[in-house]
Image (cartoon, rainbow, N blue to C red; front, top):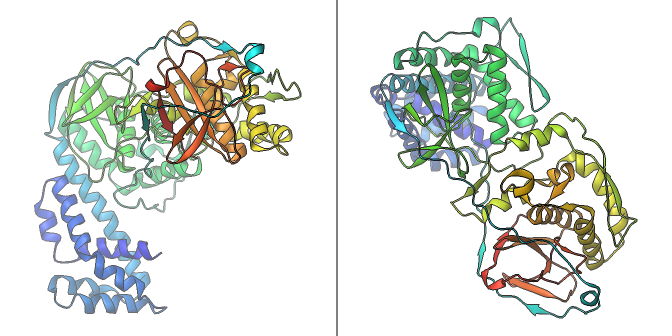
Length: 544
């Protein structure tokens, strides 16, 4: 609550005070944003102290703010209209709305003129490596008691932590309306609805800057607030990742306006108002939206605009006329999936998976087909142009509740009373022997990593898929830290045990991680698959 009041104070002071003239003079979106941000920063310390001293008397805040700003004539006028906190809130809410409307007006002015021709940079194919075939341990090796053996490692990669999802430049306020008509649509087999009525339908008179700017100004009106509000609510309640949210906006816009340029503009507008960085573009008679990404995406042509990479959403044009108008506080889309997304469930066929060494560990698994469909279109990407981060994206995505709720209780029955060493041994053998190995090149025509649920769904998997799945099981079920170990052409794991476990191990940040390789079939803990050169290996840190 304190932070909300501080934020309201900032914007209300800025918009209602003597700075309105300065605000109106600027036609630059970036200047507008800087003026607001600098003004807010300049007032931060004083506002924080006021909020900390806030009493139960709502007027106290107003009086203290007025006293604190006694030396600022422009600020004095801010407080004249506020008799109580409710009135203050109403006025601040109005000023938030005016602030956002003004920003969109300035943006529309840029849209009229800020167009330039660009050629795409060629798509970068995902590197393909020669995969190391799986190895089955022989009976003689099984009898050898593991001994502690420290392994050298070339480097350690720690992917950057995900950031919070973007937010609108100002709160999107619901509007009272007599027509609460809702449009139904579906994305990834999931039924959704937003408020959108026939009066909100619009038509682009052309694809020139003036026509698009006019439509943008129209969309900036409060009659579209409820649609934006509902979209943001779906992002929150359904726990949608940025990629799922963008595709949801596209499906919603097409349901409301058909497969049209108007639908593209509506998608771009709501995406922008939600806080994301995007650019409008034209290719012949088609309007396109470009999105920027914090991750480098393989297999898609991209546009380098002032050092930022942009990708065409639902298109692959090699040349475009692009509007490079910037919107305040815009943030690039992230391809992290930080929480379990709430898609409707369409169960896949049931699959039976059994451990060879522990046949009692026979699991019946089904997967949400809608989630598999989502993963099918998920871009393959890396962070900071570091190829090692690719697998961390998959391994750090939480397991879907439709799988975890059925699989995890069954697995716990077989490991619940075991030591951490015995429990990991059982999980490792289950992953080693329950799944059928096959090369990606043969199945997919090129490298393709699986999210954990996909390993349960598809009939074949390889070393990276097994390691990603195994890392989930150990972290989720046992609470043990896991790292990925990348050798050229092979991916394995290592586990930090609470007890003393012997075998090949890697020291990382003062902790001992024992090698556990899901592709070294039948191998116990602490055994590295033959042919691996640890002096060329990289440790990839995972969320734990």
